[in-house]
Structure formats: structure tokens, C-alpha cells
Image (tube, rainbow, N blue to C red; front, side, top):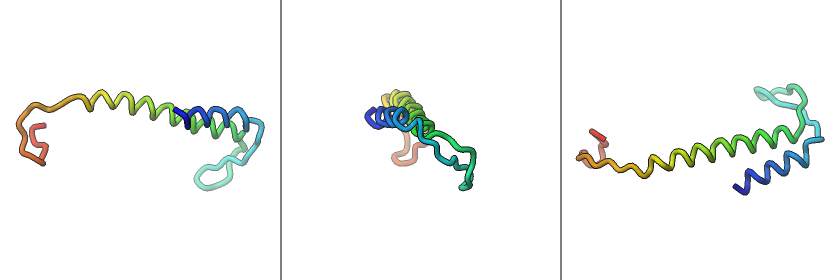
Length: 74
């Protein structure tokens, strides 16, 4: 998607910028800003795949008789 592509681009553009890493709200080992953007990109990529895989389950329709609104026997 568009946001994933933008994060990939920013990862390249800012790969030379060093910033302080953070962990548990405290300063940590310095990292490159590009690494942080790349991490965001990977999270988006992973989640887009998960959404695509989950879409298949939306095509399944329960044909059983259930009490309306309870989901019993679903």
C-alpha cells in the first residue's frame, strides 16, 4: 500500500541519520532513523498479509440454526 511504500522510501532517505534508541521509555543503543522507518514498513507489510488471509474467513457463512443474537451452535 501507499503508506508501506512511503515508509520504505523514508527508510532509504534517513538511513544516515543517527538517533537515540528507546526502550521502556528510557534511552538505549543509538540506531539509524532509517532502521526505525524500516521497522514500521515491516509491521505494515505483516499486518496487510494478515488482513488478506483473514478475508477468506469472511466468505464462510454458517448455515446452521442458531438462536438469533446468541451465536449458540455457530
